Length: 458
Image (cartoon, rainbow, N blue to C red; front, side, top):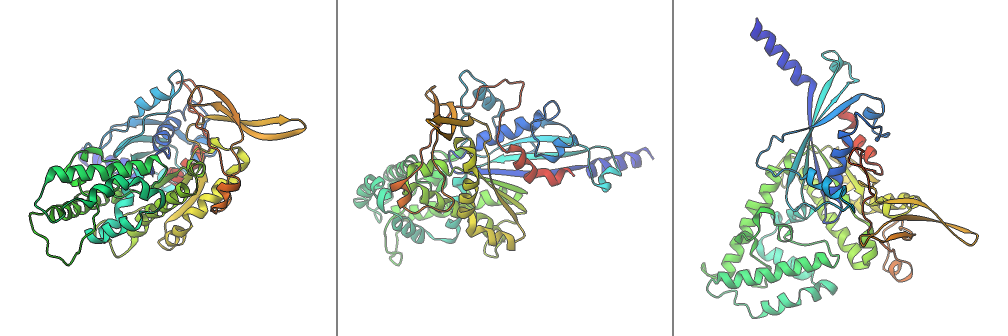
């Protein structure tokens, strides 16, 4: 009888416990580390602070509290939350170091359920949340699964235009004299691959976001591995290729990258996500210019292919994603004045529009919003003569106090003339100075939490 009673109690306990895996991604500098740090920080403070008015469970006092738990996947690095908070609470405060690989952190939220089926068994329930951080650049590699080495090479050369062509010149010059059909020379391959990787890093540094392969700029634990030492090249795919040639090795490494890196990521990680938030920095590309902005849009479209592919017949055998909600969030909303937030949402909606209809058809709920995970500025007004203008004030990365009006954010995808006649001025600010005993200041983190997990706490 005791064993039966224990089994019943265990069953009831599992019934009252639920689980959700939230994936956080975005291209470099979109604010993934800041977002996860703030999300964890806000939830850990819910029992002592009323810092999330738009998060229904917290507002209605149903969220009892949150605690950190050991992660269940011991093969994935721990998200460096404590280190991030040390940066944020330093004097002067600093932005946390960005992550460059997959990482994970786990929370348990205890709450009072609303649903009768849950209240029947117990007065409280527990929601376990796994938060997984991974680079958006890794999603840019999904199209490689549909291309052989020759097709991928051709796509890369077709993209060499304008600034991208200039940045690639050193690699292209070296490629001209490289003997593709000659006997394998691993040192020469490594040198060429290094130049190609330098080109990809130069693209990122100059505001160009679409880079393939994505792992070349954020290699994670594959740094220095031969699987990341290949590069596109021009050759006749009908020509017989010697087994011991440089070209044969390039093709072999490309295929290994497809199977062991790209496909493995989707099978082992992507297929386990329940909810997805994609962080998008629209402001720095607006500041950088036409090429940077539209390159970022192209990269974002490639990321959105991941969710379409996940539901398609083409790659259904590879993985079976169960993502039912995607949130696209325009970050750094505190770097524009509040009346520009509506325009910022509209601009983001325009950028993700190609994916919206597909997601709706596949019964995946999508939404767009603006947010600031960790608020860096205060909004207000400045007066010049008889005129009053909106402005933001903060401390720049060089420790100077500054009050600025960055400019208007376009409602729609801007044409090239936007940068000739108006443009946008982005200023980077430090996080606000705060106490470790208080939750981090934010804009709409509560709204993001409500969208991502609000239904799980009913």
